Image (cartoon, rainbow, N blue to C red; front, side, top):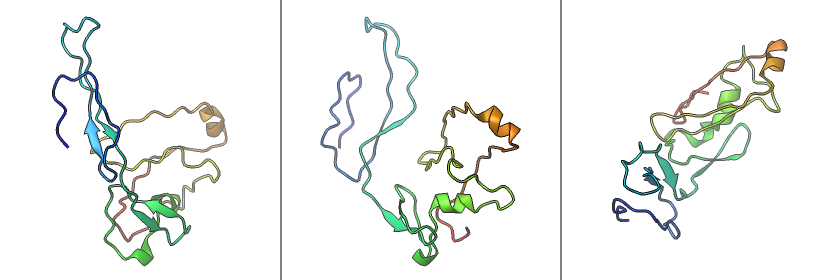
Length: 141
């Protein structure tokens, strides 16, 4: 695909080929179109990747690798959610609603917001919140 000429105010994203993920960022001008452009937005993704499914040998669900690589033995593959659940046996994840946010990184940085209205109640019950990261292309669970 060709680059969209700059500046462009109307972009058609219909009919993009499956399996390719296009990146885009947006900058705006004021209503009159004469002022300076705003700071560019975070890079967003347009389009959909073709599914690359692997079966988790722990929970037996299909997991979509998206852009991640997995070059290890398929009989050792645990999906990221199973690996995260078993990552720290001394700080077990509360089942039911234990994983608040799950994200596959596709860029070097990521930002997100969590709305935690029940945080005070969780703290009274002596529960904690942890950030856990794993590498998908690994035999270690």
